[in-house]
Length: 590
Image (cartoon, rainbow, N blue to C red; front, side, top):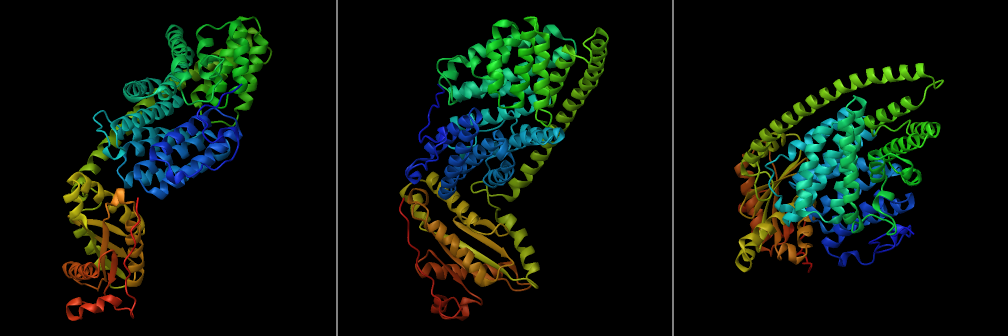
């Protein structure tokens, strides 16, 4: 009987039950459950996979509602990952990966951004683009250089280390699929370090299975160029790992049967045992694993292992039939280009048009010529990857230096220097297009530092800055002006439209849980930009409007067309728009 471990709501059995009261569950629970669902999707039947995808979508929506960037980023990655496993949903992974890239860049989540590129590399291979996969792997590797510092946005260092290990395994997997085994081995060695430091049984199991997969592909590749001794050494190591994985496998998140060893349930592990010692002993188990194989890599390595066992048992015709069936099944699959060559070679070795010696010799000669060409291609791929890797490193180094000059290090927003450049562009366009500028101040922020700590104040600043930016349009620019003040540039916005947009931002901050905002609210003054008006004058008028918002109680927007210095103070109460008084916004408790 197949045991689906950690199935909290019964969804992995295909029962569509909405998880109860998600809003009351912790972020840690959401992330833990998502990890379980990814494991379930990897090794389950189609209906259970779809059910896991649906539940993960619900968890992602809950994470989006809460708005914690690091949680949303991890959830986006999991949702995309699940879809890559499911043929019927694989194209739906693309918009999620695009969103993950934008989200991780916006919030400075470097490891998750690298993970998005690694998953895009896997998608490129599914689409038959080996060059695209190489590029994505190079970008991801350039981001995760050896001197990478822990990302404090991800909270505990162990969480960061676990995500880093997973991303490195993903990069190593792409390189393995491309047949760049030497570099894949180096990346997997880095992953091994972090798995050993912070991984649990599941991460250890995933890493060891992928390590087996790399060694099998490497061994088959070495065989194709006549390096039989080295190939046998790779197969022997893979077999030893297949035995060692048994312990962590028992405590992993994968669905499994507890009455069978891991090598009888995981196709890669079973193939590793068979390739190291091919013989009749493995035939029945491999036939069963062939039926359980869900992915091209599993079908190919199990078929090759089974064919060799059948050949050693004096059943060569049956061996050729197994390989022919797998070749036909994978006719349109482009995800494993190097392993496919191994499959073709194995079939050529065991068969021919008439089975005679002459045909076999001709096929062997063709295979040799083909392998010489592929070996040269391997060298070119390594050179290309190293060139792109160095290019990406230099590009990122230059970009980082440039970004530091124009970016506020605490919030990640453009700084005062960037504002000075941007506002000139806004004013230059104001002659023919409506523009607005707002000055935003945080109400009650000084009390956060006084009652709690400056570290807590920094955290509130980051959260409020993120909420303000996310509530506005993508074309709007939010800059940190200094201290607890921000300036917002709203190109193409009339004063009414700008006021409405900023009102949404004020509501969004007011609605934050007290545990995140510490009761801080926003006072906003917004003014239209006049053609050729000096930037200092625009900001001065916005500043006057902001102080009027504060005098009216804060947590509100005051929009003013002219200058308050020539108007009675109460004029701000109706915003110069016919008597619409701003209302004090309610607080939301945590």
